[in-house]
Image (cartoon, rainbow, N blue to C red; front, top):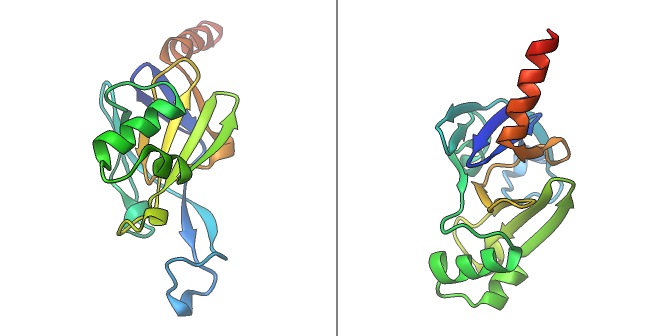
Length: 169
């Protein structure tokens, strides 16, 4: 299990994943039949952000992936979409940005995936954002995690759990 600290939250996950195409002889980068397999990663942790990278995978999968709180801080999907439309991609409207977003709910909050290929960006691909409950959005770039294993919790809760564990042990 991996653990990183970003802003006021800790993100725990079993592994990052990479794409492995089933028809490798075709060298098809957009193989819809691809499968995802776990990959080992290295983590460089700072006080407020983390940098994750891997030795394997396609370029976007290797990283480095800068996992950080979005600035300025936003808490909702709509505010994040406005930020992406206005700051990073000012040639696209808010509606265009909303159309490339895929949202998945989890107990800890929401996972937002933006498919930049739909706007003909090169190299395109999918960028991921976490919107933890009651905390600002976190950008994790093109880093794919084993989403069902992801847990996001406030850092003070994590520290409290560690202290309880030490007292018992």
